[in-house]
Length: 125
Length: 136
Image (cartoon, rainbow over all chains, first blue to last red; front, top):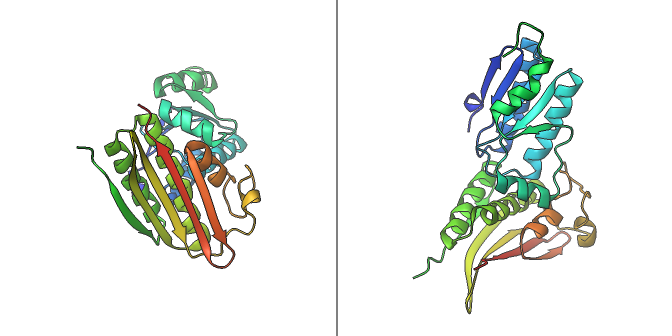
């Protein structure tokens, strides 16, 4: 899994990032860096992390995501984790993972709705 | 005829953690575990394989199916010749870590599996044996 496979799309002032389904640790770290760079470059106010294809969320992966949420918050942005699978939610809870201050949504569509109030008038999605 | 998956994988690089997840996922799915149990097993395997890589540098992951009477299960064994765990009771506490994780690896893996035993000797290595039984 190479860093090129991480999709980062800017939608108005929101960054939409699709997390690969089974990333190695290097890809997860690269994703964090790529997200922070894009948040700065595009001056985004919100971040949607689409984790709907993620099959395994282990503690390293969760820690990096929780850190990213915290870093984005320091930069003035809100993060929504979108589309966590039921099996992953069950496992993450039993494992004892906490995703920090991330907002969550069932899917990307609802995540964008949650971030809509952050966008300036006239620039709504 | 029930499929009886078994195999082993040497862990030498970080990419082998991904390989271990895929092979364990295949074995668990072949045995007939449902999606939630497959996710539990693969997540535990990911934690314990990363422990090998992070603390010992290299080691082995082995998996085999279990058939005890009517009970079917999957056994995973994680073995390394690394520094060992000086205080297993401490390592089993949530939130305790000498590495860069959350300190959830060992206690988390135990919660996700049905059985887990750890043998470790300082300076010699660590062997973690875990089992998950198929609910019928």
